[in-house]
Length: 340
Image 1 (spheres, rainbow, N blue to C red):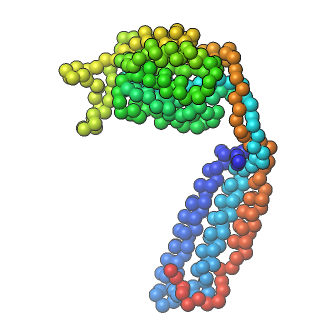
Image 2: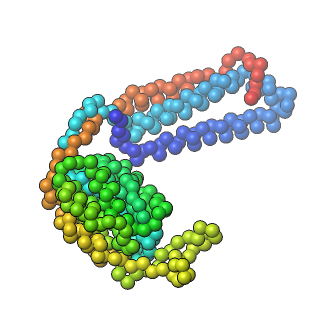
Image 3: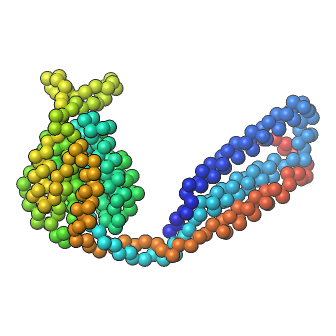
């Protein structure tokens, strides 16, 4: 396993194409000047002792040397041992409502983007907890399985959008089923589901799934996103590509408002709490404070350890190749082929 100590210096590798471009430009200008100076007859004689293959080799060596020096600068480290690491934590599934009503802008910049932003901050708080993501609208699916790789979880979070599920609706019951299946644990504790939704147009058999939630000892924290007064839903017309607001079959502009009843119910029945994201900016930090008070379980993972610096050999090889490129002569026996 390889890690890098100074990824901020990776910009040095961008010098490679820059140097190549400068070198090519210089050679091109040099040839053009020789053509203008010597003319068609004298130009080949001016280059008769230049080995173009050697010139290319020098250029390739310099580029390779720069690449190796750049790689050494970002500090490669290699782990030698794969060890089992034990942490204390909770398994957390975050279920995102991706129905089109989450595009409403009564919570800035809109409901979904605000929820994603706050969730990203929540993931940054986690220490040893496994986290997974579920996306739902009219149906649901597992977006990201439970993982300790928080960077990967945030990458999956970034791609969640109101267009990821074609079937519209707010199938909270189906989302809870998918979340429960994602735990894959027989333990009747150490499980948390965070449901983020505007609660509108609820679908599915909520009563039966809540029985399973309670039977498996899962705690639900629900987060309502939106205003109680409601807002229009901006969207882009699929045919014209123009911006407009969603309309119903009678061509009236649709207004969507936060429906808290279902969200309050599922949180209460599971022993969790309901929060309104628009009314409380510290929703997710409060949820994490609640989670920290729960009984933690041992979560095992395998990680490489005993990392050691490995830049020395790479740096020496890069410097060596650069010196060789400086010493390599461009002159040799007269060549019969003087140009490309």
